[in-house]
Image 1: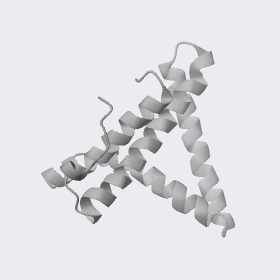
Image 2: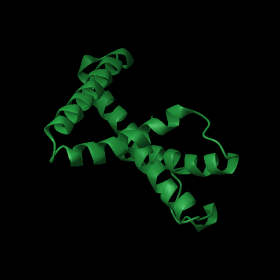
Image 3: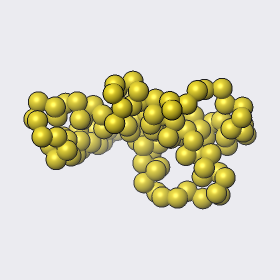
Length: 127
């Protein structure tokens, strides 16, 4: 992992962003798993927006977020030797999913909708 949350965010944003280009180049999605963070972002935006208008959506959104937090806690317990670091590991999981998902959506916008090529991207890489 990177030395800071911001560096971790930038790294995984780029992973998500460039994965769209790779998928487009190979004309295939290599694994369904790579879609999960983008779907998580879609859920957060749509589910939480609709929860203002529907009690059922509020309940479903809350339950899904609770399941996410429980799973993050469970996996954080497995990944850390110090219980005092659980919140940092959980934060890392959240950053990984959010940044990859946002990068993936930006990649869809740039490479599929706007039909940009990789040379038209002006952002610098983390490495």
